[in-house]
Each structure stands twice: as structure tokens, then as C-alpha cells.
Length: 439
Ligand code: PLP
Image (cartoon, rainbow, N blue to C red; front, side, top):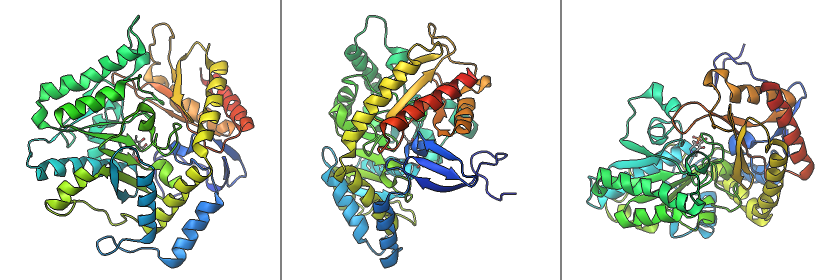
């Protein structure tokens, strides 16, 4: 009897014992193709020798030094590498242990920035429906997915949620993608004006929405207009690239493809690639110096900030992505995966939309293609597909969340960047069999 409880109190999952490239193995010897990198984490696959070696060698020299007293070489090296490759004016890095810590830190940083700038009324955050920013209570307040939030309400922060940019659901007949992008962004300006610009501290969004929407990409021009609106009203733009960052969508930072740079960006999953728990928040020198020249320190902190072994893993992962030109590989293999998904599921009566960028792809499942009605949530379609795929030896990430906050059904695919053509065939075959068993 296990003393561990994780996601489900009654489940007894198999015991994972090993990993090899795109596969994980359990204690019975069964192999699973990791079609979602866990939750878009394992971008380099399992057992990458360069990363394990970097962690081992860091552990041999220095395992831990508290950031209240020290910085460390691996933390400095990682920060330099991130800043050298980050878009826009991002030039300060705050290292944390995961995604929720990064988004929490970003929200607090924005708040402290405005207080120190002498505009303490700026306390409101605007985020979007159908979004997920983490599971700690502040990050959960920022997320716009009702079924995740409802049992914990009232939540702590004053957050308003505007409509997401969801062309499949919200683009009107006859409206061009560009016009839709501008109309979707207008929701931000409307909300800033409704609240009063002097009360709004920041807008937070995922460039490509992951778990709660299934690799939902923005319409062309959407984020450029969002950036303009933020600039017009002095609202900070916080991008949550915890899932879609670090090469996953075909550029190191996802927002590069939208031609914008944020004031703050959060990264995590692909940064440690599963080798160590690590996340980061990057911000501009304006934000940093306002706080540094004001009270002198960001009033935040966790014990394991900038952990040397985690930082060594992050540095080895980002170096591998850059030195092995894996971002190009994400684009070629991502195109191949998309082609295969379209061939296999494009005409499926219950597949409403297939979308995404790079090796970040989503399939939206619907009860009826014509009306786009989701399945009855009580059918638990996404959960059943996850189970059927697992039995087939495929790890995929079916998740739920509809635009109106109900449970919907998506399959999210985010395989390691090293996935080859035959493994893409295997992924699509296994997923096909799993979907056929359920619907
Ligand atoms: N933000 C986004 C976009 C995520 O997808 C996630 C996790 O799925 C988080 C934040 C929270 O990250 P973590 O689970 O590492 O706390």
C-alpha cells in the first residue's frame, strides 16, 4: 500500500523506473511513448547524458547555497544565457522552482513595481478565460478556468477575465483572421477602460494556451495590438510561457513569433526538461531598477530560489536546445506531426479543430462538428482517452476547459524535440486506437 498521494487519491499508478529518449519504462517492463513530455516538460527526452552529467558534476562541487547570502556560478551562467537569447529588453532573471512559483512571483513583482513607482492604486490584474497560470492560490486566481477555480473561491486576487483569442469558437463568419485578432484584443482595452487604467497593474496571458485550451494559437496581429494597448495605458504585459516556452512552439520564446516582447515572462517546464525542478521569471531593467532604486529588494523569496543543481540543469538544457539547433527540428517535426494529425483526424466526426505550433499540438473534441457542442462533461471523454492511450503505451495529455468555463475535451501533444518520423507514426497510430475505443 503506497503512502504517496498525488493527483488521484484512489489511483494506484504503475511505478516508473526508467527513461530512454522518447520512452518511459515501468517496473513491469512496459514501454510508453512520451507523446506529451509529461505535461510539456521533457523537451529533450529522457536520459540526456549532457544534462545528467551537468547535474552530477554540480552536485559534486556545490549542492546548495542560500540566496540570502550567495549567488552561484550555475545560476549566473543560466541567467546570462537566457538574457542573451531573450526578446526585447528583458535583462534580469529571478530563478524559482517551477511554473506556479514563476507566475506568483510575476504578479507580486508587478504589484511591488507600481507601489514603488508611487501608483499604489494599480492593483488589478486582467487575465483571460480558458487560461491556466498554476495551482497556488494566487496563480489559480489569475487562471480563467472556472471548474478549476470554483471549489476554492472566493479567491484572493482581484482579477478580471476577458475572452481568450479563440478563432475556432469566436471568429465570425466572413471575418478575416486579422480582423478577428484586432477584435479579440479590443476586449483588453474595453476592460482597462471599464476598470479605470489607473487601477490596472498588468495583463497576463499565455501566447499559445496549453492545458486548458489544447494548444490554442493567437490570431495574426492579436499580440501586437495587445502590446500597443498595454503601452497606451501603462499596463505591464506578463506572458506565461511556462508550457509554450523554451523552443516548444518553434522559437525559443513563443512570443517571438508574434513579433512582441513582454515586460515580464515566466518559463519553467522545458527549462528543466524534467531533469530538475526549475522555473524563471525574466523582467526588464525598468522594473528591476524601480524596485532596486526604491526599497532595494523584491519582497519575495523561497528557500530553493536559484538552486545550483537546478540551475546547472537549466543551463545544460538551454545549451542543448541552442547548440543542437533543436528549434529547427521542432519546426520540421512539428509540421510532420500536424500533417499526420490532419490526415488521420481531419475528417473525424468528433474532431472540431486541430491546431498548435511546432511540437505543441492540440485536438479539440466535440459531440457535434456542425454545432461545435462539447461532449457532456459526465462522459469524461478526455480522461477516458488518456487511460486508453496509456494502456496502448502512449502518454498524451487530454485536458479540459471550454470557453464558458465548462469542462470540454482536448488532447494536448507535446513530444520531446528529438522525436523521429517513425515515432510520430507510432504516436498517431496509438492515439487513433485510443480515440476509437472511447468515441
Ligand atoms: N502556467 C502554465 C501555462 C502552465 O501550463 C502551468 C502548468 O501546467 C503552470 C503555469 C504551473 O506550473 P507548475 O505546475 O510547474 O507549478
